[in-house]
Structures are given as C-alpha cells and as structure tokens.
Length: 203
Image 1 (tube, rainbow, N blue to C red):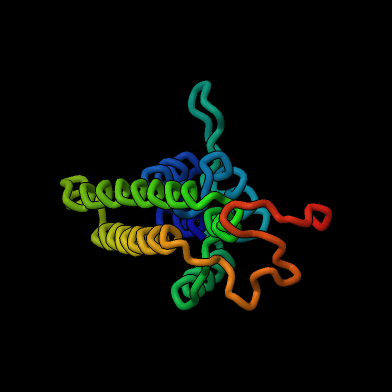
Image 2 (tube, rainbow, N blue to C red):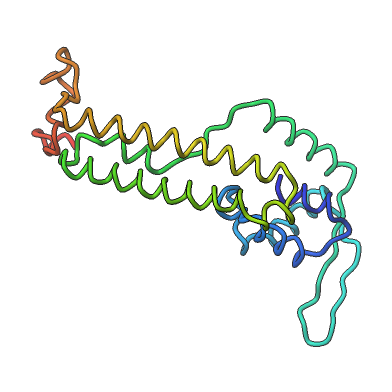
C-alpha cells in the first residue's frame, strides 16, 4: 500500500523519488518496505495493472528512469487497502514474541537481564521520539499527523517498558512457570528455570 499510495500522491513520479520519499519516512523500519525492493515492486504493480508506465527517460550516463502513475484499478486497490488497514486490527509479527514463548528455556537471571535490556532500548527510543516531537524538524517540515504517529509509537513503547518491569518482578519472585495441574504432566517434561527437557528423545 505504501508504494501505491506514494505514486498516487506524487504522480507522475519515477522510482527514484518514491524510494527517496520512503527513506525520508524511515518506512523501512516500520512498514516493512525495503529500499532494494522498491523498483521491483513498481514493476510488479505495473504488471498487475495497478500502475502504468508514463515515460522512460535517460539523462547522460545515468540509468534510465521510468515514470509511473496510478490506473483506475490501482486507485480502487489503494482505497480498499487503505480502509482495510484503518478499520481492522493487524498484528505485526514480532520475533521477540516467539522467543518469549520459550521463556522457561532461559535461566531466570538471563531472562530478567534481557527484559531489562529491552526496556532500556525502548526507553532510548522513547527519548529519541520525544526529541523529534520537540524539534523544529518536526514542527516546521512535517505534516501534523506525523507527530501523532510518533506519539502512538512512544505510547506503545511506554506500555511495553511497564510490561517488562512487571514481568521482571514476577520472574525474580520465583513464580512457577507452570500451574500446579501441569507441573510434571505429560507434554511438559521440564521446561522450568532454564532446564532442558528431561525427555530429550521426544524433541
């Protein structure tokens, strides 16, 4: 949606300007848009009939640049994606959640150290976002809704910092990772306090 929306916004536009704009938004960090894939994505969108090639020009020895604009089909697709993302919840895959699923495989001291480190990294990110919100760069060169997005990211990070602190306290208190009814039960052969499963033949 990002590439389609930017072409719609800037059209007619060539891939270089789309790439430059996305990088200025740091979209590679929060929208899963990688700079190296932008030209391929533009060509694919054109093949699917969502974009049309307006012209191809070459200046000197520079690579040829193709200019794109959105088709009627692309306009409909953008509107569908835009409202789908606005009106639905979409969970972003986070590798940390997969790692946290195996919390009992880590020694408690290492788990709490890792959570404290995560909280510190989040705090650093929050401070960076707050500095950006207070900067002339934000106030004078960005649309107001960009600041609102920074506020959203900061609020999410603050909530996760608080969560990290709570989980550290629980782990350090020695709380059991398994309810009493599951401790020692079949299928839970020893995932506690960093111990490896006792029945290694079943792994």
